[in-house]
Amino acid sequence: MSSRSIPEPRAIIIGCGVAGIVLSARLKTQLGFNNFVVFEREQSIGGTWYLNTYPGVGCDVDSHLYSFSFNLNPDWSKRFAEQGEILSYLNDTVDKFGIRPHVTTGVEVIGANWNEKKWVWQVELRTLETGHTFIREAEILVSCVGTISIPADINIPNHENFNGTIWHSARWNHKYDLKGKTVAVIGNGCSAAQLVPHVVKEAAKVFQFQRSAQWINDRPNSNFSTLQKFCFRYIPLYNKLYRFWLWKKTDGLHTLYQSETQASVRARSEATQVAKDYMKRMAPAKYHDILIPKFPLGCKRRIFDPGYLEVLHSENIELTTEPIVEFTETGVRTSQRDIDIDVAIMSTGFKIQEFLSPIKITGRQNITLNEHWNNTQGAQAYKATFVSGFPNFGIVFGPNAFPAHNSVIYTNEVQVEFLIKSMFRPILRGDFAVIDVKQAAENVDVNQVQSKLKSMVWSSGCANWNLDKSGRNTTNYPEETWRFWYSLYWPVWKDFNIYRDKGSRPWHPVWKVFGGVTAAGIIAQVLLASGKFGQAGLEKAMELVKGIR
Ligand SMILES: Cc1cc2nc3c(=O)[nH]c(=O)nc-3n(C[C@H](O)[C@H](O)[C@H](O)COP(=O)(O)OP(=O)(O)OC[C@H]3O[C@@H](n4cnc5c(N)ncnc54)[C@H](O)[C@@H]3O)c2cc1C
Ligand SMILES: NC(=O)c1ccc[n+]([C@@H]2O[C@H](COP(=O)([O-])OP(=O)(O)OC[C@H]3O[C@@H](n4cnc5c(N)ncnc54)[C@H](OP(=O)(O)O)[C@@H]3O)[C@@H](O)[C@H]2O)c1
Image 1 (cartoon, rainbow, N blue to C red):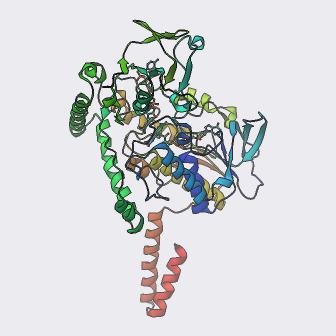
Image 2 (image 1 turned 90 degrees about the vertical axis):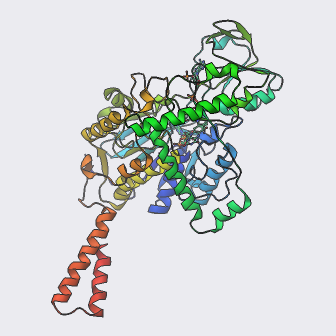
Image 3 (image 1 turned 135 degrees about the vertical axis):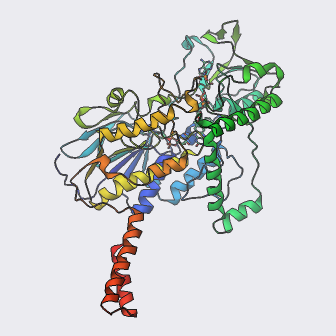
């Protein structure tokens, strides 16, 4: 590799959802670094929360936990906030941290090539409005494109023959008035559960098509009182402690996803009974058989009920497990009958297994990310963040970064901290110019993750979006989020190939303290031994210690 001549490194961030916002905020506040651009395909920031606007959309993790640690929000209106409030919060954060001037919207990253001679990423971009393509260079490239973002293609034959209207729940058609219409909702995941109660209120008739059952849990969603909001805002540390308590409590749910210990099997069995009782209590008896799953709780993403089961009592909804064979000109043909409909709402999920694949990322030796992942037999990344052969490139919320039981904002923040410690800070300080994880280190880390995943509930036999075609779990992190934090807390430098290396590395904080205390002890001993230990000697020792730290 040759050396580069550009004085201040540049960075390009792809995507301005939660992850892009965290990274931008941290670069500015922690490193005072401003030489970066965020390219965002959509017309505005927010990612998931900009794109998903179906009625009823909201978070299913407590809002105070589904928040940035560096910008807590005392004003959350309720326990599980809805999309509009979350999007406003993301916009407020972007403005508060001066991120907006860094964001170029309406521009899609279509490819990126690592230039080995110049040690830069050459990023190919397209302005969506004009189709104009252009190249930008940067020493550092980070993908923040999310995982649950590209709607799945319509998987039912002859949809092009249908004369009615079709849309995906993640791209809601706000121009269409559902009043008096006959609607098919296809799918019954978290999105469908949130939107069905609203569609039932509007439409004349709703047919909901269920392929597999889902475990559905109670979700009491209370408003925060003025007093609570006052406490969050004005009592020092109250909001922080509340968030910490929520995080710790939520992390405890991880035990439901394990199969190894008796304690976790017992916990899951108890939680299963609670969910079963809830579903039987809330849903009409005629649906109990088809609604209650035969597979273990947690195997599919659990649904926290936004009023879905209750709405199944409405006269204008029919839940059916009849498979849809094809679309007709006037509706859908199931295995049993033809049903005329005006609208089909595809709530059929996302292309989760594709990760970054729509973007052609070409690393060293001209190998693309997709080729690399073909060679490794599935998407994978070292500590969910780095991929061997793709220098100075990081991924936030990529392979095996998804906590099934906790907040993605938390894990996105953990990954951003890791990127700052291992890549941004040392490169900006000039400690080294290029960092690339070793293939062996990537394999060892991924094998550990995969071997832990084998005993987890996602592999217990249901169809879910966590597993790829070969049955490998490419999405979940197998442990509690505190372990994710610990595993990514400090870079293991021997796992990386490092170029133009000055040999200096940031000290691990523990070693900093340890080094400081040891140095203080040695200096004190020396001064004592030389009989010079007085006030002046002590002060001198303290100065020396400060210098070391
Ligand atoms: C309806 C819904 C509800 C959810 N609720 C929760 C919840 O309650 N709790 C939870 O923890 N998680 C939840 N999630 C998961 C959610 O995706 C994450 O919490 C989080 O929003 C992910 O943020 P992100 O920035 O990583 O990705 P995203 O929010 O997906 O943002 C990615 C951004 O990258 C942009 N982008 C993609 N490709 C390109 C490209 N080639 N060029 C330029 N820009 C590009 C996209 O336009 C988008 O703005 C939910 C997901 C959905 C779909
Ligand atoms: N905060 C929240 O509450 C919230 C809300 C929405 C989304 N999310 C996140 O986003 C993820 C995706 O949720 P999602 O509901 O959009 O997608 P999803 O969980 O992947 O659900 C898609 C549903 O469509 C069904 N389906 C697909 N093709 C079908 C067909 N031809 N006929 C009938 N049914 C069909 C699937 O059935 P099978 O199960 O048989 O495959 C599944 O029930 C969630 O798991 C969650 O992480 C969270």
